[in-house]
Image 1 (cartoon, helix red, strand yellow):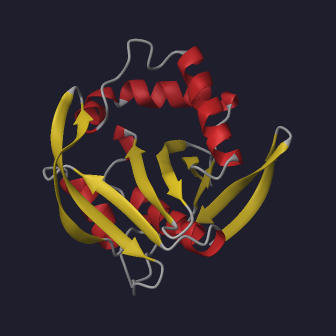
Image 2 (cartoon, rainbow, N blue to C red):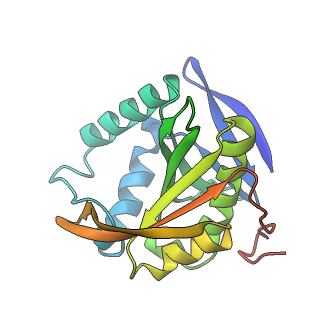
Length: 204
């Protein structure tokens, strides 16, 4: 696993390499691959995400998204990544560390998505393991939090394989696909014991 600083434009940005994959912040050059993968995966993603806007996949919407992510990065409020294969730079999905709180909290929220053609192959389990080390070792966070709907077994597996512990249930916590939904609350701490995730998505 490696953490590098890669120049995109005039700013240094984080680059996380883990298990034949890498995570880096999105930029406008990613628009075509991002829009194509999201469009192909729409039916797979919509049940688990906030309601898509009518212009969700437009270039202007992506530009607004990238600018928002860049602002959050500069202000240490959030770290958004796209997930790629090292072998061919193929886009697989995305992961965010959002709502970064400093002071006495030192925490952030984790979110992620995987394109439908790549779901169930262990890629996000591996990516999250790298993002966790980045969050704890580089950002010096104490706690990572995540929320997922009780029926989202794939997301639950990703979290639990990375040592996240279930802490409770939040009723009608987030508005997903236009409906307020209950969510299971998970968290992991920097000093929690955890197994090493293998590139296959297993653990050892």
